[in-house]
Length: 609
Ligand code: FAD
Ligand code: NAP
Image 1 (cartoon, rainbow, N blue to C red):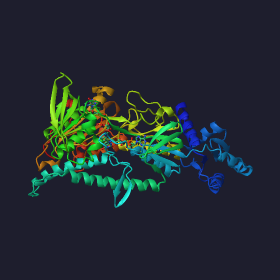
Image 2: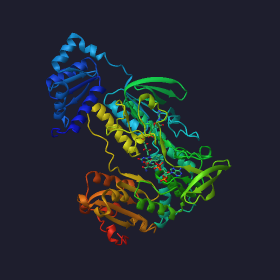
Image 3: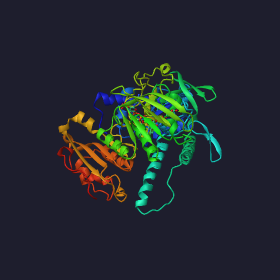
Image 4: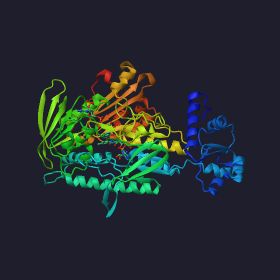
């Protein structure tokens, strides 16, 4: 690593070193082969004091660390020892301090926090962060508590649950998993229809049993939770099933489900409280409607369903419910999948429409009334046109609200800790190290302002944060070119910019868009969805035709997009895609043979493989 010659780089490094000094009772900057360093490390081992060591010869920018330590302490040699933020010095000074008792005095000066790190929220990000901190030798606690939905669902989390004949706390459920399993249920339904064309004969009328699916999915979640619990215990993370709120900048109150309050302090905190579904604020919404938090453990089949909203959650849930054979209508306020490539979003929507999903476009609900109670009952929905104010009515068994999610930041006592939130959306702004405006409080995951709301993003941010705080790492979470997939019936995977955004940023003249329709081999024998799948890449002509947008509509989009996500992280160009040999016969190979540009208006239908 070359020497740092700019102020920003120097400041960043200084902050990183200061953070290590501030976060560790004993911090030793060392070199793995240095006998004086070994002597000092042995001393702390003998004293049974947890000491955090950064071996400067084993990290890439160790020389820069040493230069900065010289600037900060006047000492360039190693070991360079700090105790409770006080600079002790090298080996001789440390040994002398041990002899005259001042070392013990310094060690006992600890501000005596209960924990090195408390993580509030035990979802995707919080668990990853707390486990990593504990693995790096820190005393870590994670608090998780799920406030029930208006329908009373705690969605499996934080409940006592019977599994393998044992009672235990269900600690965590990633909602992506039941969603993907229910999507898979629908995919299997289509596969069964295809199977007849491939010669499979089965006489019975094929029908789907909601309860069997729900039980199987929930049982699998139970088994996952058991694994999470064991992993936390093995890593020495103290998991507490309680609702946490700040009462002072370094102190929280934890309230368990019996209302018992316990207080804990920590040197550092990570907020990872996620989001919960938003309601509409119209008559009848909380009384009669469900959200995605209820759907995956709904005890009965939802029947004829109205889905309100048109983003990820709405289209995915509406898609798999229709795939189970239910009568599904999606009420769209404006456009499908805001923020995504609109060409792709509309193609995904058209496919749903062709397969029986009804779209009520440009309407918003104004009132929900119960016509009949039951499982499911019957509801009347009144909706208003966004263009003409015309009112329409419809009857459904279930109304699923999927109009976005609110950050869980309003009841965490952030004002007591001094953490600022964006008053418009309740989200938290952080710097590129996930640090809030209060230096010892960090935030990760869905509650971050302007960042991706995806499980792997929360996990990556949490893990890397712990490594920076306690492991001397410098790696930051990269929020650019994050691959993602919308699990609509025809799945949509993307990475990088939408065509609309790329045009805004670079101008149409500086872009080349290559695209093609395609017909997966698996669809040909059943004769379905001919030339409905679509592949598109957006290349930046100003930068060697680098691929800045990748879009795929077809089967197994997540699997296909993941690999191209890696390629984009490596800066793949069109030429590199062209020189990659495809795997035949697959869907993904289309990206190695794209040769029709959108600007040419050339034919993009595929006649065979
Ligand atoms: P969460 O995982 O939501 O965890 C936050 C936890 O903190 C919750 O358990 C909450 O109850 C708890 N909590 C809140 N306040 C407190 C408090 N004061 N004290 C204690 N505990 C508290 N992402 C994908 O990548 N792929 C998908 O396929 C996908 N599908 C999705 C499907 C649906 C229906 C939804 C709603 C989301 C989906 N997501 C998906 C998004 C993904 O679930 C989130 O991005 C991810 O869970 C965010 O992680 P997090 O750690 O920020 O929050
Ligand atoms: P979202 O992306 O915020 O979209 C909200 C949708 O609801 C939009 O279509 C919006 O329409 C509509 N809406 C908002 N207010 C409305 C109102 N009053 N009446 C009618 N419609 C209204 O929310 P989301 O779908 O809940 O997703 C939240 C996040 O979860 C996503 O950003 C995503 O990152 C994550 N997620 C990921 C996956 C995955 O990875 N597969 C799956 C699900 C969720 P407008 O466009 O008109 O505003």
